[in-house]
Every structure is written in structure tokens, then in C-alpha cells.
Image (cartoon, rainbow, N blue to C red; front, side, top):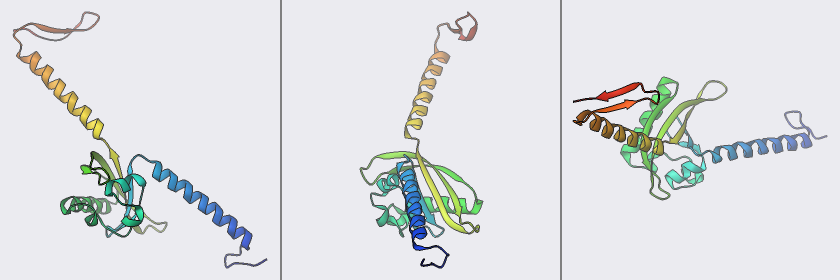
Amino acid sequence: PYLLGAGLDMSERVKAEQVLGHERAILRTLIDTLPDLVWLKNSEGDYLGCNKRFEQFFGASEAEILGKTDYDFVDKNLADMFRRHDRLAMERDGPSINEEEVSFAVDGHREQLETTKVPMRDAHGHLIGILGIGHDITQRKKAARALAESEEKYRALFEHTRDAIALVSPGGLLLEGSIY
């Protein structure tokens, strides 16, 4: 049989390439299926990869994003903030978590994101760049604001009424009360 440099004959090499291609397809499907924005940048801030959800954010295909920076897609202030958090993760050599509100280029809707950035290293420990994951927390933030507003209304009502108010447990235990 014809031997390749690695000592594999052609049929073994073809099988190995098929397995590798299948594994890559599965990983790509996994990354693209995630509801979160996922991206990878090198240490200079050039994009090395992203998922479908991230493409919606920039309003561009991955092919159009690769090799470009944040400054090619968002305003300078937002791009500066993204880069600041990239550098923070690299300096810490660990996760950097922040919240940010962004507009999606694909349709203009806004989302509140909790973004985690972590340095990525190769098998030899050399810095490849930054992996970012942006998780939509818009609904959680809205619910927290609504709860705080509701609590404030009832607290004000409870504290400023001239009537007697008592909160009693189902067993008859006084939980809280105000009598003026």
C-alpha cells in the first residue's frame, strides 16, 4: 500500500478525515444551536469564529466577520468597552463577566446580555485569544425591575397608611403589622 508520512495508507487516511469531518460537523452544530452568542477573537481583537446567534448581532455572516474587529461593526464606545473586557480577561487569566445592552443589526431589537469572556489557550499553554459568550438576561432584568417596583409600592402603602394593617400567617401568627 501507498504510505503517507504518518505511516497511514490511503484508506486509513480517508477514514480518519471522514471521522474528523464528522466530529467538526457535530461541534459546529452544537455551537450554532446554542441560544447564546458565542465568538472567538485573537489577542489583537480580530475575530476567529462565531456562531449563528452572533451573526444576527452583527448582521453579517461568519465569513464576513472573520479577520475583522468590533470597530468594523459597532460604534467606537461600544467597541472600546468590548476590548476593555477582552484585556481584563487576558490580564486576569480567567473569566471576566459584565452586563451590556446591545442592539442587533439584523432587526434592531435590543437585549441585555451577561457576557463572560475567558482566555483560550492552545495545548502548549499559549494564548490563542478570547472566547466570549453572551447570555440574554433581558426577561430576567425586566422581572427583577417589576418585582422591585411592586415591592416599593406595597412598602410605601404599608408604611404610609393611617389604618391598621397586619400580615398574618395561615396559622394566625403575626408576620408584620403597622398601627398608627
